[in-house]
Amino acid sequence: MDASDRRSERRAPKDLAQFTVELDGNVSGYLQNISEHGLCVVLPVDQPAMQAKQPVTGRVLGQGIRLDFPFQGKTVWFSIRKIEQTPYVFAGIEFNVPMEIPGSLISLSLARESGD
Image 1 (cartoon, rainbow, N blue to C red):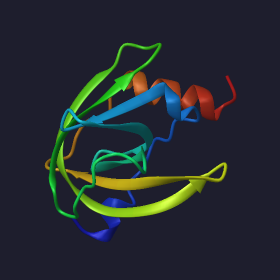
Image 2 (image 1 turned 180 degrees about the horizontal axis):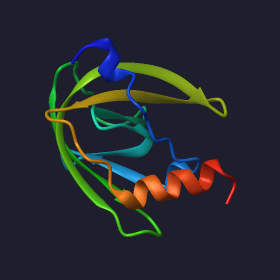
Image 3 (image 1 turned 30 degrees about the horizontal axis):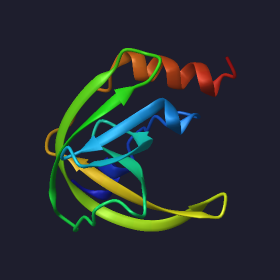
């Protein structure tokens, strides 16, 4: 994947708690944004450590909407950022193959962007 692919259109839900991301069955966080090429997940710093280029299998689960979006990929970047003075690990995951973003996720994202 080149840099232009990583800049493809992303969907970023306004309410991060709306979408849980489960990785390898033992790591759980929240969806920051998603595109056809990958996603960014926000993880508590006390989650098991992950390595760059580590293969991952995961799912994005919706709360309040029906969504179970399985994926396979690899970790490509990490950073530590604070949200309301609490540190979190932000992890970028690149999908093994481009994925079609579920319509329910796009619809909710667009509704939240328009203020509904």
